[in-house]
Image (tube, helix red, strand yellow):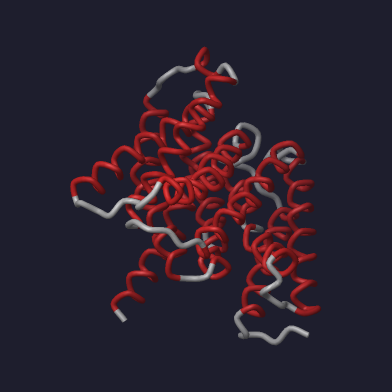
Length: 297
């Protein structure tokens, strides 16, 4: 019962904190190169978590193979997915970014049904999948009219959602030695090193300019987005199936849209609201069908 409460608390933390991170990322990319910023974020967070793991004498992976296996989610979810999100937020508003990423559970369902073949969703479930992706496509089109998103940015965010789905499924199924804190540190450091190298290759070093907003965004993302949020997410994934843990994506958009409109004055229109309802509604219905709360034919 105690562990159940911990998982639920971690899940709620992810729902709230990650909804706010899109705002901080949008602020950061306004005046700082995206990949180098993401690299700094995960390097700092990884170093802090690694020091904690060493000080607390947490168990490390027993072999180099396990270290590599532990780093895979960091490459997929933090370097790949988060790196693309940082890049895309140069053109996509923070609230819309979060809404597009809400299709992540749909990608998880597709992979489980088509690739892994260990889940069945029936005709109703397939209808939800189609409606969800249609709502996403409509959201990109309607958002382009008010400058909230463009096709290029929308495709980048959807690719990020796919990478996060792959990392989530891998994390919930893979078994390797060591404590979860050491795995998180390894994942963050792997992502931080990879993103920093990528940023340097892209020539971002020439555009580095520090400002108060960038520093504050970095501090917030390191502490709340990475150390607290990502650690809680990995803990939830270690206890729940990926398709259940990923449902935090239902709540993140609500938080992100509200903050984007209130703080950054991001634009939203009735057509976009309708698309949000279609997309999120489809994702929720699919989840209910998968867990037997609704019967799908």
